Image (tube, rainbow, N blue to C red; front, side, top):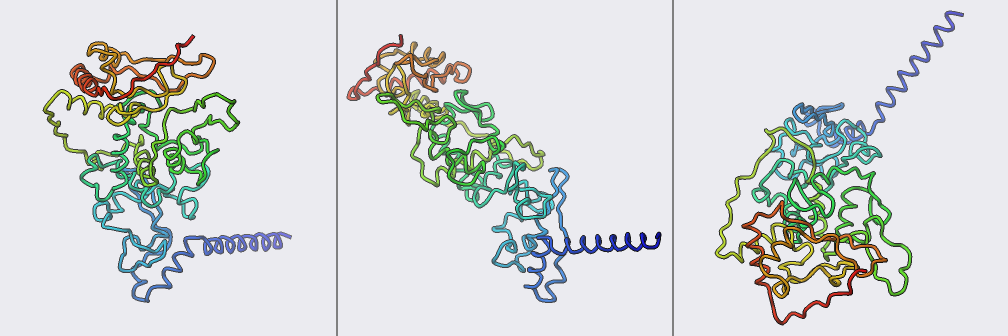
Length: 400
């Protein structure tokens, strides 16, 4: 009986070993390695390591096994045209040696995984999936403080920063302490778990980059709270977000998405950071020119339009359909009263119809952000915009 039990247990053990061996032979990464080796000559195979490969970067707390499948990533003389056997594009590995940087700090994904879907981070509870194509430019902002110095390598990231400033996003959003608090702080928007997003109106893949890009293309449709029922006759739609449709092209929406993804709370060791050189303050000839720079720097265009020449629709507002075009400011304010309005802001915005929701937009206080010299120059600039040929706004009836 004991001998029979021994034979049975031995057979089970042999079977388990056989199953384990079979599983190892059929793992995804073994298939990739076999395919790659079959494409090489006998001499070429000698220099190619096999088995699970990993790069351990202690200073970044990263262990990446990407080169288990991407076997030719640093071997251009052996690379093939098909993935995952291509070499790394460009000369980036010259200044980013894999043994010092790994892979996932730039590309995202799950470094320890050895199956494609898991390694690319496309699994339920992984919050940093692979940054595909040009989206990987977002990672350059983690280390490089001076984007102009590397603009040729990160055109979308650089364009995204320019668009953010051009459209006055800082007038509503803050990034690392600079900007306003009318809407959400974007300092770590690139870290936001995609599982917390509402994908009800998203047409593409359910990922953070896709949500951000579609939000830039149509913010009022994507933002949670968008009305799906028919609006009662005669009533004006009041959207859950004040953010307008800027009429962005697909490339512009993608560029802004790349910039948003670059905004993370990740802190890298100092030896990896390339700080920007101290900026040389621009010199302006007049107070009005300085005021124009203040207007652009603090994102006033976000509500008042570029150059203050046309505002954004502000629903159910007593003061009219839009945030005021600033060309007629001189008709209603002198320098001191205008400075006081900017200091204190105007919130909440008086409602035209008290029975309907209030607009999500308001004029915030700038007294903690704009210095007195800047405020003086800004007032000078706004007063200089007066154009007697521009029709005056007609205020709506007062809130009861």
